[in-house]
Image (cartoon, rainbow, N blue to C red; front, side, top):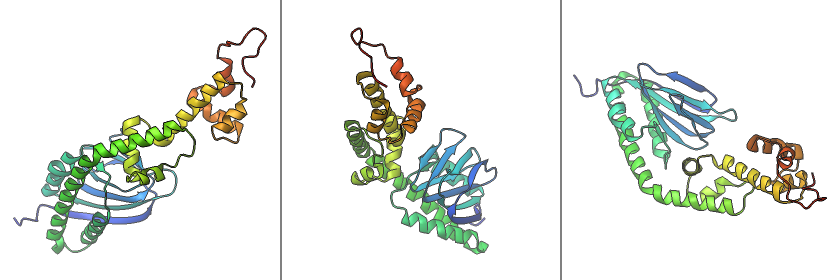
Length: 276
C-alpha cells in the first residue's frame, strides 16, 4: 500500500459570509474548520458554547456532536475541509484531539493557516493524484497547531496578568459602554483571547460582568442615597428610566422601586426613607 493511500479528502469550501448553524454528529469523517472572524458560537456535545468575534480553529471527529455557527447578527467567514480513512482518524485521535480536548483554539497569526486551508480546499476539489500533497499539508497543520498551542501556554501567565489589570481598571470606574476591544489591543491581546481569559477568570463575559457591576452600584445608590430612580439610572448610563428599570430587574430580580421599598428604613421617625 502506498504511504498516502489511507487518507482521502472528501470536500471543502469557503463561505465569506456564512450564516449557517450546525447541530449534528459527523458519523464517518473528520474535518478541520477555520473561522476568520465574525460572530460565532462554538460548542461540543451541547456543553456551554464559546462565543467569539475573532479567528477560531477547530475540528470534528465522529465521537462528538458539534453545535456552532451564526449567532443572530452579521455573519462569519468559514473555511472547512473534510477527510476520511485510517490516517485521518490517527491524525485526529493521536494528534489534534490530544493537543486540545475542547476541540478548538484561538490562533495567533492566521495568514499561514488561511492559505493552507485554501490549498486543501482546492486539493479536495481536484483529482486523486494530489492525495500525497493533501496528507503532507494535514500533517503540517497538526505541527502548526502543536506549536501555536505551546506558545499559547507559554504566554498564558502573562496574558492572565494583563486581563487581571483590565479587570482592576473596570472595577476602579464601573461604567456601561466600556471599550473592551481597545483595552485588549492596548494590552497586546487579541479580543477573542482576552474574552476567553476574562470568562475563565471572572466566570462571565466582559459585558455581562460590567452590567452586573453597574447594577450592583445602582442597588447601592438606591439603598444609601435619596436620588430618584431616574437620577440613578442616568448615573448608570441610561437616559431612559424604563430601560434602566428593565435592565435592573433582569439582573437584580426586582424593579428599582421594589428593591428600594424592600430596604428597611433607618431614618429618624417622621423622615422619609428615600424619595422615588
